[in-house]
Length: 156
Length: 190
Image (cartoon, rainbow over all chains, first blue to last red; front, side, top):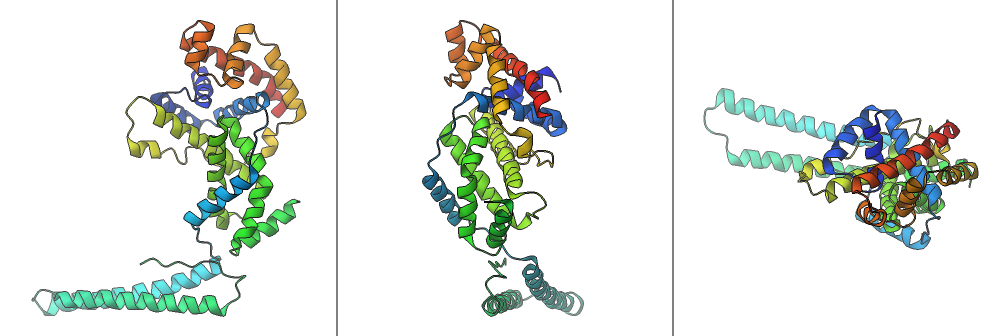
């Protein structure tokens, strides 16, 4: 921990640090826990100098709620995740198996180019399987108590 | 509300009850905004950063194992969010050309550490009085510089004009003031 880095922390708190110095400081902070604690103590000094911050509590809560609506978080118990993952894994494994058979068929026994229709139908099969998994999970959601499950998402 | 109530609320949030998270926000918003305001002086910016901290906490809640108190965990998220905000702001406001992707890489610069707990940095009356006394004991030039900055909210350039000295001197005086106070403060926190 050198004096330059400490002075840079002081300037960063005041929004008076250049980009180049900021980059340098960040590198130093990553490797020096003492410097990070210094940062916190400088901030604490500011706290002692300033009056209490006035917070409009209702508007703050509302803004957090609005942000959470905009950015919904997926929360699901691990048990359910494993269950869902296994369905997706089965679906993917089946897809790979079908795809392998098609490639083997095309590459080894038939020199003609792969028909586009077979690729399209393969994609349709995968979509259908994933849709089935979605339906299955919806059934699980309806079948189990709400205290056990929150959100479940699917990625195609 | 004791910590056990927090545990209950956290469990409810994990089960999908967003209202339970509202209760945690209401309970801790004042403390978190004040905490963030240590780093981000502007009140409205501090509120935005505090909001971001709560959202990060909500998203990370499935990974919260409850090994520490909820507030300790939230405190660490808020401090890291505030520090990262300062870094991002410094990079944005700089006149130097900064690659946009590089400016976004600030995330994770401050890693959560188990030793960073609210107890370590609790602003008790004793600490507040010690800091105030340390400021009073500063040489006049250092005292003026830090007061212009912290109480009047003046920029280094404005302080330089007011004190009739170069900006570099202002930067140095403010740092020396903080450093002098820190020398007295550090043993109290350890």
